[in-house]
Image (cartoon, rainbow, N blue to C red; front, side, top):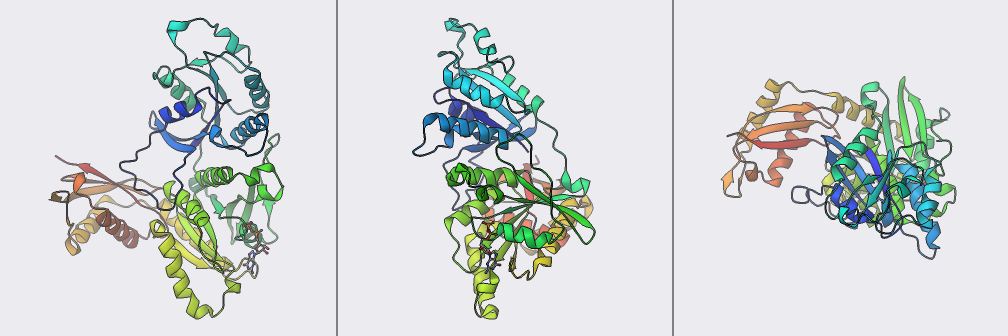
Length: 433
Ligand code: GDP
């Protein structure tokens, strides 16, 4: 999924634009427990293309001069986004702060779209050419409160979005290694790579650089993406909690598989579940790696309790395998590669419709759907419509009859029967009249 970042000084209308373009499908998306609701990102869709939108205005700094704050917001946009939407205010015209942001944006080669918000044809008192003088191209005139020009803007966003290639198809999967500070992300990267480490993408000219490491293991290539690299450089960003979540989110978004690291020698915290929630909401395959197992006493006895504890915190990640490792001692590191390979196999699978329907019928026989919302679900037939995120459409008597737990049951049946180990399964229910 591509990423769009909205930048601009305060009061130009960034959040109202943000709210216009994201489609929070709150009613159908179940809440992920423990995930922060204070959102500066959301999913949008236009012309069947999905993308992630970030409102950088929500990244605030305490005790810092205001100019520094907008500068950092613009830098984050350059670093994280594929397309940058720079919002200006029609009613107020260009200001010094706008020009300051523009100077930062000149440095990027990424597409920048100039948007002039609060545009109202009634008060044509300002020359739109004034906004062209900022030197970033022709402005798109919009009013986010009145919904003017939003379609044009979305057209241009989709048009400017670079093609995103499928890593799984091209044979090199991207693995995001996420987790709160100090769980051992960098240590894991080191033990996964050994001497074979190769940094592949320090992006020239950017303030922050993502650390991608390409590694070969038993003849196969992988890219490891570590979010910890930044912190090590002692950048101001490290202290911004929202930024670290955003960073985790964009890393997850651009990866095929997520390794969620937790510290097995201490308790799971909100920070862990928040990060795990991001992976779940992005519908990515997850491997939970419980690190620092060397520090745990009575391992035989502890493993069962630990596993249960972790499961109870990450209920929504029930498809995720849990591995107990020590990055420092390099114990069970090979299991991580194994889990990744299993997931890659699952992601590539396409299931024959006839076989799929046999499994559906059997599942309904063993465990008929419960009465729910005034009726009992009957699935007539279904088929796989997509790989990578294995997606199945089921034609049913009434999608309202789908009970949450029954959906889970079906997901589990499909996972078990077809070997989608560690992979989330997307079920879509459609009414067949
Ligand atoms: P990051 O912030 O998630 O990248 O964590 P680091 O990889 O920098 O590790 C943080 C600290 O935990 C360092 O002092 C590591 O030596 C230590 N550490 C990492 N993995 C292990 C492990 O498996 N066992 C133990 N005992 N310590 C570890």
